Length: 156
Image (cartoon, rainbow, N blue to C red; front, side, top):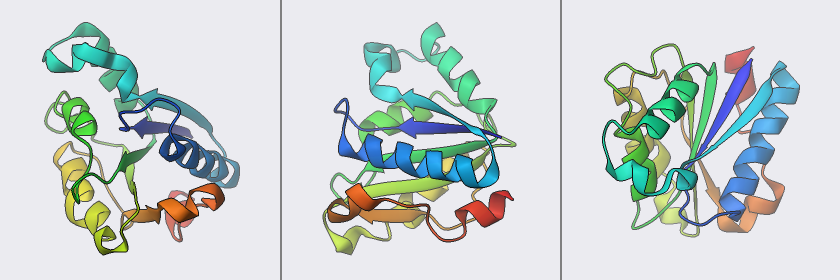
């Protein structure tokens, strides 16, 4: 199983990235698979040009994955603009056949519904399936991040 981790954090080497990769690696161990990191920040200004070849190759890489753990920090109660810029490059139904697992990180428990209310619909719009609820991880829990309930079971 090919698990892509799409990281929509505007800072390199963030704790959000570390937690998402830890979750993806645990998931890969449970269901058998490999993990590929797609750090959207590395695409830089190319994200501003629809049709950019390097972004298109990255979208194609994501579309070949079986599973996508899509992670964003919570900014102003929503996902990052960086992640949105990347996902705007995905054509309609471009992630058909990909199981997307929405994950958001934040410091305010009042935003715990953001993955389900905001990120999940965005991923569904790309054609991905989201068979489990999105997960919100508090900043204070990043160091002990584990696979959310139901994620491994839906992939088995």
